[in-house]
Length: 268
Image 1 (spheres, rainbow, N blue to C red):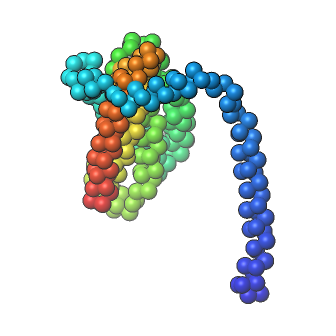
Image 2: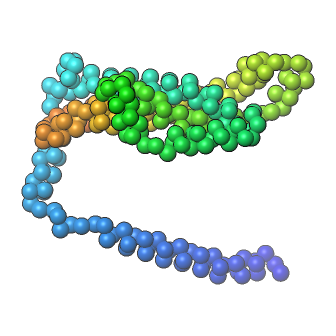
Image 3: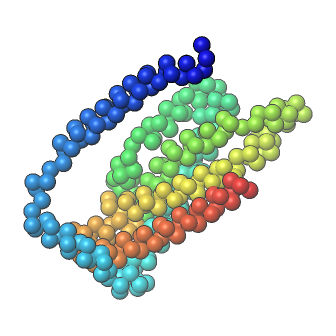
């Protein structure tokens, strides 16, 4: 049987697969439409939507451009500080956990237990961590830093583990043959291979933590989220517009810088 005949015989099965998948997707889409309810939209809601758009398009420039402790600029700096310190804390704790979870470094039972711990850490949402830390240390930026730190551990350690398990073990074998200690193998054989990738992943996580830090303010963990929710609850849409504009500009700047840094690290 030629290759063409095999392809022709396989084609009907591929067609059945595509048709089945299409039917399932369409059925799920139609089922999801049942959750859409337009009956609750009244004229008052449309007026509020119009006020929101008008307020966002005409932001409070005094709030946006001033330098007081209630200004957007000050709150954005606080948000950046929370995200930065939280990322550093998460990266520091992630490194030893990543080595303990790497099956090519430690015995497999230890690696699996550490991975279960990391899965548990990743399972809990950031807002839940924020509420727990607020109960422990009170509302404020410190709770935000600790929340960002522990949520960063779950992701960073997992990505660090992937990098560690892809190490070039020939270098370690060569160092073992010449009598290097474990510390020397980590210092001169492992870290040079991992440093640029670790930094790239950490920068990427900091980019994500900027968004996390802005949301954590909603539960009182510092940053710009609390003034945002207060302005929304008070229907001060021009203040909401000023906060959103500042937040969008900041995130765009940080994303541009982080992309540049990650590209430089990956390409050397």
